[in-house]
Structure formats: structure tokens, C-alpha cells
Image (cartoon, rainbow, N blue to C red; front, side, top):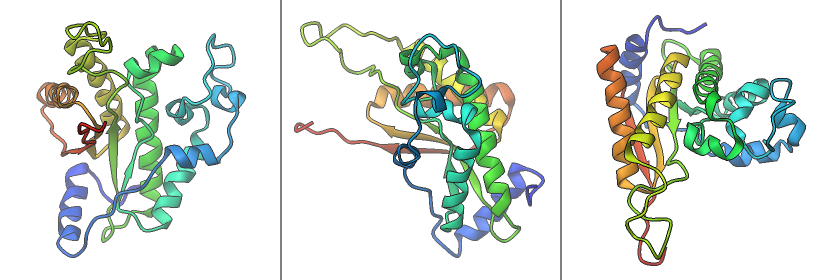
Length: 224
């Protein structure tokens, strides 16, 4: 059970904690999942035995099919002393999930991922040591600023509105699952970042509640 009655109460505590120490975010999730050695059957679990496309490598779906293992990874980070844990949702929007034919499960996997992370955080949280869940929104596997076709610079294989809609669905799942912060993570395209922030803000406006937003970026120079 959480040590706090609301997000607002938890944030008041984290603001006090931040006055005395640097808050520590967790580390990589993908490499830890690889270390578990899951096979195709593990990714499918009992939920997606008959799915018509391979699922191995779709780490985000493990929040549904192998939830105990994902929660244990979060708990291992808390044991190491972190203050903020990221959800297992780097590729959990419908655009990236299309590679696996799992678009319609985007909301479900984001909500489940946030719930798992919150459950892990609640085990370690105390009044003097609040633990935050950062809902992770990855960059997608598409770019709005550049054409995927060298010979056709004006071509785009995804629209701004499609990116916004995908992020909206993801944000709804993360908030409903209990995320305290939204983290636009490892973004490499500023237009994608704009779409993510716009999607987040529309949800905030609709619900009359705002959460903090964090952004981490990847800088690409002339060398690639």
C-alpha cells in the first residue's frame, strides 16, 4: 500500500526530498529483459498463444504476459536505491506495436506497465522516502522531420496527427495506471517531441489535472 493518499501528497514529499539529495532515476530495462532469456512462448504467455505474428523481442508486451518478472526488475532497482522508476513502455504506442500486430493492446499494456511499476514503488515507499513512477514514452519508430525515402524528401510514412493520437492513447494508459510523471524518452526528432507534448497537454486539458513532464533527447550530428 502506498505511503501517500494522492499524487499531490507524494509530490510534496519528493520536493522536500529533492532539497537534500539528488533524485536518482533507474537504468536500462531492455538489456535486463534480454538477460532473462525469454523465448517466443514466454513473450506470448497465456494471453497471446494464438497471435498470428512473432512476439519475441516485443519487451513492452511482457508487462501483460510476464508481469511478475517485470515487477521484479523494478524492485531490483529500488533495492539499489533509486527514487524514480520508468515504466516498461518504450515502444508501447500503437505505431511501434504495429510491427507485431499488437496495436489494439497499446492502452492495456501502458496501463498494466504503470500499475506494475507503482506496485513495486509502493513496496519501498515511505513518508520520508517517496518513490515516483515515470511513464515512459519512446520516440516511436517513425520520424516526422525526415523522409524515409532518400529520393523523395517530401514523403512521410506517418502524419503528425497519427503520432499525436498514438501518444494520446499511451498517455491515457500511463496516467490511468498510476504514473506520477511523464517522460518523453530518448527523443531524436523535435517534431515527434512536439507531437508528444501536444498529446500530453490535450489529456491534461481534458482531465483538468497536469503531471510533470520530463524530456530526454538523443542528439544527431553530421556523423549520424
